[in-house]
Length: 304
Image 1 (cartoon, rainbow, N blue to C red):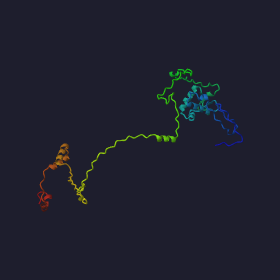
Image 2: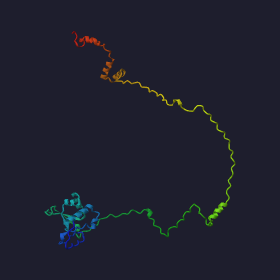
Image 3: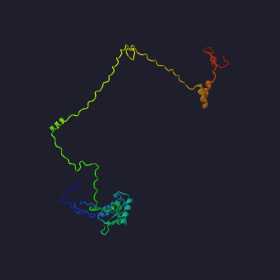
Image 4: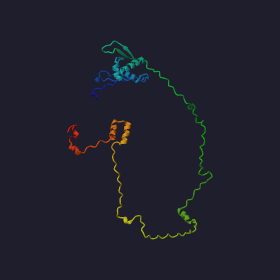
């Protein structure tokens, strides 16, 4: 949202000095200028991790223009998006490097944490960081580069270029003479005057007498591969031979049943084998006799 225009202009903000300054009072809406970033010599300190730099920026945010601040670990963790345990380890590292100093004071309503963090790197007499950078070690120069480069006047003359094995087109003593141009008409007449080469005459070839072809005898019977009388009659088709109907076998025969009973000793198969090998029973009386004697089957013995 754009700010409404006023009758007077807002004074320019003070240049960034690294200590945070705001716009003087009396300006409309009292717009505060953001605090400056970390000094360059602190931002490039290789001993500080990215989390350490973010924590220093958060301490500057809470301290404003004061030389100290008292935020809690949870507030700093929410500011830098880290765990409170990570924040405590970073504070210990910054204190060991001399960037801050922690003091424990009685807790007050304004400072419920009971801890005061002094920003020693904002003090004027604070020594700037001088990290002990490891000495850069260069790789030894290979032997092929230790030989000094020869100067132009010391270079040996170049060897002549190898001669091509092909002979030159013309030797030095050869003289190239330009041919005289001959008009086309004269050239054509000279060609006509030239004698034609005589073609050698070949000896006449003697033609051998070819015997005449024998006359074909007139055949009395037509040389046909089929009988003309068979045209219009259908040949007799062979009658297919019917296969004998196969009887479907149900169960096992007597020999197979005896073999299976000897191998398995199944009681059902034993009973079936006994039924098949049993002698036939007596023949039943004819039906006429059974009709005459109705009690021959159902009546008990001794009754009439």
